[in-house]
Each structure stands twice: as C-alpha cells, then as structure tokens.
Length: 115
Image 1 (cartoon, rainbow, N blue to C red):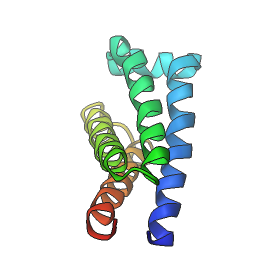
Image 2 (image 1 turned 30 degrees about the vertical axis):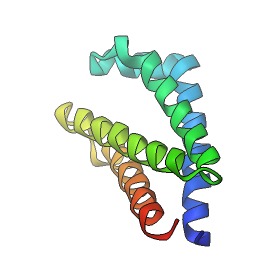
Image 3 (image 1 turned 90 degrees about the vertical axis):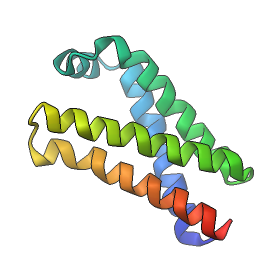
Image 4 (image 1 turned 180 degrees about the horizontal axis):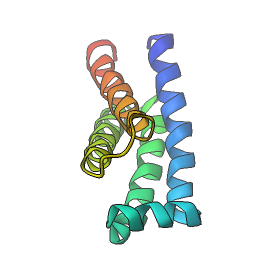
C-alpha cells in the first residue's frame, strides 16, 4: 500500500473519530445542528463518523472496509458540503467538508487501484 494512501487513511480516521465524538458530545455541535435544522440527525451523523473512522483503520488490513469507509465518509461530507451551501455559509465554513469529501474519495479511488 502506498505510504501516501496510508497517511490519508490514518489522518482521515483520526479526524473522523474526533468529529464523531464531538458530534455526539459537544454542545457547540448541538447548536450547529439546530442551526442546520437537522438536529434529529446529529446522533446518527456522529455514529456514522465514528464507524467510518473505524472502517478506515481496520480497512488498512481488510480492504472491503476501507472501500466502504472511504466512500461512505465521502458521501457524508459531500452531503455536509451541500448543507453548508444551502445555508449560504462562508467559504471558510464550507471548505472543510468539501476537502474531506475529496480526500476520502481520493482514498477510495487509490484503494481500488493499488490495494
């Protein structure tokens, strides 16, 4: 496996573990989800982020989980990007979701090609 791909996977896994925990336990995230008018999706979003992080980490040893996790997180972040666009958030608030969507899509494509 390419060292670049491993770095991307570990970076994304660590990031989404933190994002997921924040989504589940941070009062600031509760305020954000209320602002999005998506409060009912907060817990499932946090759980999906944590499951995605675990899938990426375990996917280093079991490719199907890597594919599932990277593709799933890419879809989740693309959805977050669309929510940010619909709320007319600033580029600085919108850019992270777009970057993580691309990063996980890139990991998905590299995993298909090289793993």
